[in-house]
Length: 262
Image (cartoon, rainbow, N blue to C red; front, side):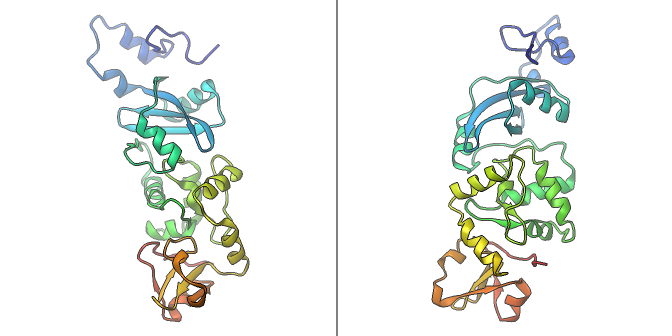
């Protein structure tokens, strides 16, 4: 039997004590009350296939793929301990965000995250489409340079992957690392965003993790849009940021390399 049964014509899950209590009120509940205490789910096509998305009155709270309806509802309830009801048609902004990888106009509900997790996800959200940053970059940016493993754990628990692009965070050695939807999905997403993973891998094999231009004196991460403008005659590779700085280069203001490669 479906996890959403028994339901009424409006799709309310009356097996949930909270929903049943609201339905039993003698008078109609105030407008919007149900949406403040329960979330609603929709299914949307995305680059990784069909995804289930849970939305509260504050925004998108949870997103997962590789599950059916019942599994998603159970997963959401296990994590958030609140009712989840069918939500009808996905909002157009959500459809566009999942198709393009640009979550403009989509509100997120990140309540319940610990401060460290919140900081990690907000840093990841700033990574532009088509670019990548190492886990150490996030750790450095949030003021916890030694917490690289904890950063990876926080990204692994990202409640809204695709909308917060944790697939753009990779290992400091150039390997793409793990992903909540699996490494093949991560690679597919990055290639769809026109990230040259083959070039990144080739550079990493040569211990090159930063690239600089001798005309501008700027050093970048290899996938930075400024790095892609460097012509071969003026291109220089570096293993560490310290090495680049010692050679007189300064950090790019766009990609802001600040975490050294151990």
